[in-house]
Image (spheres, rainbow over the protein chains, first blue to last red):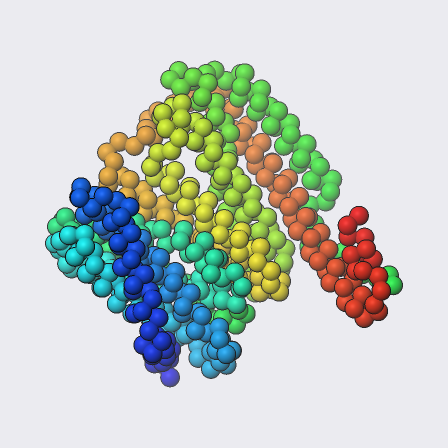
Amino acid sequence: MSIVQEAALVAAKDLRIEARARVISQQILPFGLIVLLLFAFALDPDRGVLQRVAPGLFWVTVLLATLLGVSRSFALEADSGARDGLRLSNLDGSSIFLGKATALAVELLVFEALLALGVVVLFDVRLASLLPLILGTIAATVGLSAAGTLYGVLAAGIRARETLVPVLLLPVVAPVLLGATRAWEASIDGVPSDAWPWVALLGIFAVLFVGIGMLAFGPLLEES
Amino acid sequence: MTTSIERPATAGDRLMAPVARWIVGIAALLALGALVVVGLFVAPPDDVQGDAQRLMYIHVPAAWLAYLAFAVTALGSGLYLWPRTRSYVWDRVAGASAELGVIFTGLTLLLGSMWGRPVWGVWWAWDARLVTTAVLFFLYLGYLALRRIPAAADVRAKRCAIAALIAFVDVPIVHFSVTWWRTLHQEATVFNPELDAKIEGSMALALWIGVLAFTLLYVYLLDLRYRLEVLAEDRDERELEAAIADRVQGGVPAREAVGVNS
């Protein structure tokens, strides 16, 4: 099997479990929407503050959802010796990494699409230039999923992983939050030329962490 | 039931001979003394900032040491992961250095904040360098949290080495993105490069003594922390063996048998 086929196998497994368990749709998505509501409670919705800070709020919410997604992605492997099954499956470490990261990225993209709808409706934001916005979002999501999956396996099997992953992951993905927020701001303002450098930065981050993940996932899974 | 649980000394037990550590320690102390004299009395007060500027003599060396410490952590982690050089020596060096790096980064932030208050009028400014340093602090704080998680020695070492290298790779991206962010939004930053361009002779001397003193201090503390790690590993091993012996024979509580609490 090629690496793509193997990755597709793992991704399909994760997505199938998610489709059946409905944790994303029934827990993580409502969580995202309630966070949007809470932001509106915390910041006065009448003074236009929400519109101005909407990109930042959106991406902070996505970061929080990423933490939940990572935790979920490796909770799947914690039960019934699933991790041993994965280790014994004879799949290449980098394929498993790509598969799990892809599944997480797909879940996050669905989450982001619905959350963006929420931001547009609730915060009255108008998205002007869509192309840099979409490309930036995809690059940021790939970067978040890759880094998240990497730290997920690093912490897999550790009892304190629920608290450890945020401490490890959040500082590392700080540039993603920064880049994605700026790219969104530029897109909302309708100045795509300001967004492209940030999209490029997000792309570099994504490529780098996919690369590191493919190298490091195998050895980390072996000893988790 | 005293079994022979003395571990034979191995090559990696010490980084330096005890004498060498003493020498470095005394040299560090002398250099710190010289720094106090030159920094506080010989160097003149700054024309613009007055005495507050003297904080530079410890703030800048602390920042420099933080970078050095994290570079050593990355190097140690890389050498541990490289199969030919794999040794717990590198794992301990990486861990000890990261701890010192976090302390020096924290010190840099604290001193910078103290300096910023009289000079800029604020404790904190959203300057690129400040933000990068803060992220750096949290990156390695996470690494230290990971190091404290108990696991089999080889598992822990490999896990931590990979985490340290990821953090190290992330630093330039953080720095780049933050710099970009602040320069796009702020026309003039609080740091004026031309202000630092000219530096008076005795001020430069104080700065260099500061760097030297902190570097010596770093080497001294690194060796001390390394030794402490070896002793802690030793103690864990003894406790384990004593606990096993205790289980096998019954009777004397393990802790007392090896005199751990004494």
